[in-house]
Amino acid sequence: MASLNIIYYSATGNTEEMAKNIAQGAKDAGADVKVINVEEADENSINADFLAFGSPASGAEEIAPEMVEFIETNKDKIFNKTVGLFGSYDWGTGVFMGNWVEQLTSENFSIVGEGLINHLAVDDDEKIEKCKEYGRKIVL
Image (cartoon, rainbow, N blue to C red; front, side, top):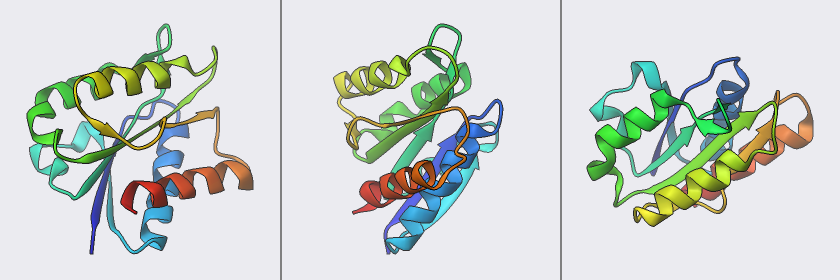
């Protein structure tokens, strides 16, 4: 059985909700899933077949410093894994996700699609289903 560890930072709970729904989609596809707040993550948190990282947009549409630090610290152990990226935003257009995908792709990370962004809360069936579908894509 494939394993997926979802490591996220969430300031308001929106990115955490995305993580839970992505986890459900991956479980539905048969994966063993752990959802880990980055503040509780350690080097063992990347011991999975697949990884997903979640961050809200912070500042001027930037990745949360907590996620940047975690990925930088563990970068050498992540290169050979397929990685999903997701996050929520309030203001702006969600350009932070494209920048994050581009940055990690340029560092030879294998990113699933173009990441997944969500404006504000995961509060309707369509947003929930998009998260679940992304979870399935990561592990299949």
